[in-house]
Amino acid sequence: MNEKKPILVTSPLLPDLQEFNKMLEDIWDSKWVTNNGKYHGQLEEALAEYLKVPYLSLFTNGTLPLITALQALRIGGEVITTPFSFVATTHSIWWNGCKPVFVDIDPATGDLDPDKIEAAITPRTTAIMPVHVYGKPCDTERIQEIADKYGLKVIYDAAHAFGVEVNGRSVLEAGDMSTLSFHATKVYNTLEGGALVCHDAKTKQRIDYLKNFGFAGETEVVAPGINSKVDEVRAAYGLLNLKQVDQAIDARHKVAVAYREGLRGVAGVRYFEDMPGVRHNYSYFPIFIDAAEFGMTRDELYGKMKKEGVFGRRYFYPLISTFSTYRGLPSADPSNLPEATKMAEQVICLPMHHDLSEEDVARVLDSILK
Ligand code: T4K
Figure 1 (cartoon, protein in one colour):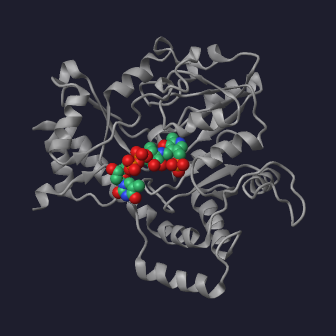
Figure 2 (cartoon, protein in one colour):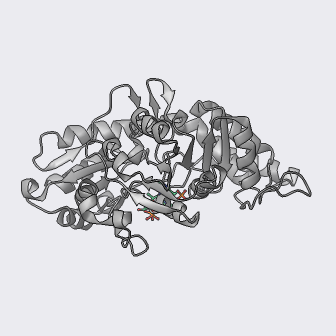
């Protein structure tokens, strides 16, 4: 029976229902359900502490903090970014009336290649929006050097990088701001949710105005803000999930170790190793298929796995730069993006979550190897 159970790419981390019920009763009693409630405040504080950042603002998803970061920093003109991400990254640039400029990635990490950034800078460039794709930290030092040299802002899309640290320091310290997604499919989730991290109290204040329609007090509106306020139910859920996220990351780590053991030495299959000094969160486990060496194309393997009930995902295929909104941009030309194009054609993200059993992992490996 168990043989036929589908194995999905991810599964949400869910809090204990009894504890959640208790908090729901408390919310019901208080009759304060949204707009900066008690649990909202507690979650902001708890997340800031867990993530080792001083200033964090909760959002209702991981897309609105990207849009708001560009607003808060008053970004216009051109923004350099990666095509190898989820569409929300580039959409946030478009929604701000800016022009995305795609730069190729480093095949060793999947992240924006710092060596290729300078050639894409023009007098209209105002910002760089890199992504710590799969939670693998970007070369933040090199990116900052370039940003400083040209006077550019840096906004990291850290949607995948919850809890990721480099030499004991949060990856969210880098750049001017970083955004997180707490979507149900992420390592840490609040059903839907997200956050924007900045480095000073004044900027956090501006972000908090922006996520509340621009209100600064009862009668004053200081900016054309949006509504991205997190309600008490999701904040309570988030507080409970925070208690078990370390355990979930440990479970994911075990899965990653088992996948690597199972795939080591297999011709035509590449995967990432851990980076020295990095606390990874194992948010995804991408493998890259070289069809000639493996004897099967990525899509053939993807189809075969599905037939066997193993539902990986081709994150991030197709490349953002190939979607109709963006494909006319000069930087979207595939000849400008050879590494991203190749990675998008080779990738399959294997099932990766806290709830995979040893049998599940064995089934995933069998679906690739047998
Ligand atoms: N920046 C980056 C780099 C991102 O990756 C994302 C989102 C964002 C920004 C924007 O953040 P948000 O605004 O979304 O917070 C998913 C997620 O919806 C999306 O959050 C995520 N990235 C993206 C990479 O993946 P889909 O369309 O692939 O999800 P879906 O519905 O196909 O679900 C994937 C698998 O998860 C399914 O096989 C089943 C499982 N699943 C899903 C849900 C929703 C469950 O088991 N339970 C569930 O409730 O986009």
